[in-house]
Structures are given as C-alpha cells and as structure tokens.
Image (cartoon, rainbow, N blue to C red; front, side, top):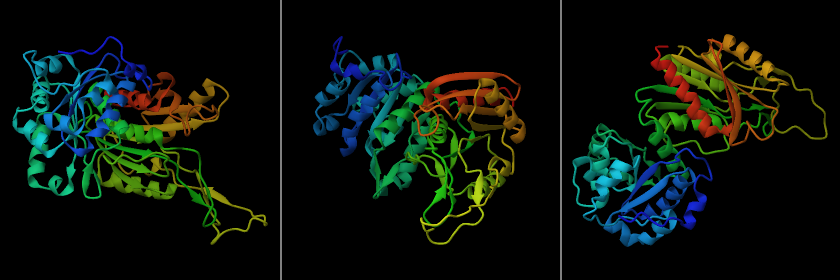
Amino acid sequence: MEEGLRYHPSLLISKSYNDNLKDRCIILGVTASISLYRSLDTARWLMRRGAKVITVMTEEAAELVDPNMFYWATGIKPIVKLTGATEHIVLAKECDSMLVAPATFNIMSKIAYGITDNPVSLTAISVIGFEKPMIIVPAMHENMEKTNQYREIENRLKESNAFVIEPFLVEEVAKYPDPQFVARVTTSHTLRSYDMKGLKILVTAGATRSWIDDVRFISNPSSGRMGIELAIEAYSRGAHVDLLHGHTDIQVPHTVNSFYCETTDKMAEKINELTKSTNYDIIIGAAAPVDFNVENKSEGKLRSENNYDIRLISAKKVLKSIANRPRILISFAAESIKSDSELYDNAKEKLRKYNADIVVANPANISDIGFSSLYDKVSIIFKDGSIINVEKTLKENLARIILDRAVSLIKGGV
C-alpha cells in the first residue's frame, strides 16, 4: 500500500492550528456527491490539527474529482481500488477513526446494511468492526433526508455507534457543512467518542444588550466563542445540547437547539423556562450578560448635540433564574484584577453566590486573551477548594478540559 513520500509540501501545514490530532490517523471516505470538493479543505483542516489523513474514494467519486487532488492535499495517494494488500483491514486497524464526507444516501445505506461493493463502505464496515469512531456527514436533497428510509438508515448507523452529524439543511438540500466545523467535530469525537452520550447540557453564550434608544445599546466585547466551543464539544461527544445565546461574532452551530436572547432578562426568563421542563445534567454559564438595564430607554434616536443622564438598574441574574438545579453547575467569571489571589477570591465568592460546582475565572484585562480572542488563560476553581491553572490555550482546548472535568465529577457520583 502506498504510504506517500517521506516529505511532501502539504506537510508544512501539519499542526499549524493545534496538535490535538498529533500521531493520529484519520481515514477520509469520499463518495460521489457534487459537494466532495469540500473534503479537500476538510482534509487540510484535519492536517492542521496534526492528523495523518488517508483518503479512500469510490470509483464514482474519482470520476468527479481526480484522486491526484487528494494526493496534493494530503501527501498520500488515495485508495480507489482495493488490492491484495487488504487496505480496508490495515487502515481500520492502524488508524484512529474514519470520516465519511460527503456521505450520499447510497453509501449510508450500504454501510448500514453491510453492502461492501466499494472501498469506502468496506473500509467503514471494517472500522466499525474494530469499534473505532465513525463520523458521517450526510449530503443529499432534503426530500430524501425526510423519508422513513433515511430515518431507518440513520438509526441503524447509530446502533453501530456511528456518529451522524445533523444534516445542514439549506435551500432544500442537506449541504456539506463548513469543513473547519467538520474537522472540529471529527477531532472531538475521535478523542472522546461518546463519553457524554445521554447527557443533557445547557450552555449560555455571547453578549446581551441593553438598549439606550432605538439605535444604541450597552454591551460588551464577548464574541460567544467560548460558549459555542463548549456546545460543539458536548455535541461531538454525544450529548443533547441546548444553547442560549446573545450576540455572537461566530456562527451558531446547526447541530444544537439554539435560542436567541437579545437581553439579559430574556435570557434569564428562557433559562427558567427550560429548566422547569428539562432536568439538565450540566449547565454552563459562559455568556457575558449585561449586568444592567437602561431604566429610561428613549424612543427614536437621541440627538448627538444634547447631553443626557442614563439611569442603570440591575438586570436579572441568569444563573439565579435556574428553576431546577443540574447535577453540575459551571459559572464563568471575567475579572479585572491585579493578582492571582484576587482572581481566586472573586471566583470563590461566585462559587458561593451561585452554589456552583466549578467557576472558570479569567483575567479580563489582558489584551490577547478572553473577549473576542481565540485564546484564553483561566483558573478553574472547584467547590472543594482545588484549583487548576490553565495557561494560554485555544478556547477549543479549554472546552475539552472543562467538560472532561464535568464528566469526571458526574462519573464520580456528583
């Protein structure tokens, strides 16, 4: 079996984003959907995370996009025909997971029912047999996705422990999602599989607004990234995820149940409503709700040549509005502080205030982390007084660290 050259220019991007998939091998199964060109970008994003990517294609897919394109993208020649080298066995045994993207209705049904007349479905069955993570990205017209036949196929795949990413429905088509998102989900599922399966998670994210007049408002620089990373991480590990969000600078994932809450009071009311009807295992307050409402909001637009007095009154506390306490409650605290001890003291006060199990505290007065950044540096403070300091890292990595701790507490019987 061709293992590729010792050096290939594509390797220059390896681990350029993070090294979460360092020393990991991902099989990329490519089938004959017109969206398959997006898998070139997916392969590259997996490599930027440190993965070795080996492409397996159906012959029909190879007619749509020349396999040399994937050779260029990954540095390893794609497998289009199986040989006496039993590539489907070798890959399934040596690689860590398989991503089938795009997955047509045809290939999904073949994997579900064990029809192995092409390299992709045969390799997929072999991966399932080795009990390794299998991620599937459906791509088809919506009328096909809505059928009973699709539901049956999807259920059979899930019974085989395959992770089927929720179809991204746009213009009556289940489209191939953003390749970076696909790589993100694949990373988490490869690393943690279904360790959160069956858990119900509620996450808050983003900044709320308090309106001064019809065009101006009070808010903060929160991008919503931390909360959204937590939602994606939990979803990728098999959890049911509800997301309450204010304004965000990044796309809210289509794979979770999301509710837009423009103001702090609306977010508080929604969390109260949801926690009355659902018993959540974990609630994470990662949003940055505005602490004050403008009492004297003006109609229309205030004239800039005049001076005004604005009266601020306290808004509802979102986490105080929880109706039924979850098994694990996690709060965030962005603090403008002068020392670590001040950060710890403020976080411990928040632990007591909300009766939380964990507080994730970060300094808000460091420019290249926290608000509107890909990165953060935090201290994780636990109810028992223990503290974990996490140096500057991607918020994606931080989401995994936080949920690892939450899962550990749940398994410990909390």
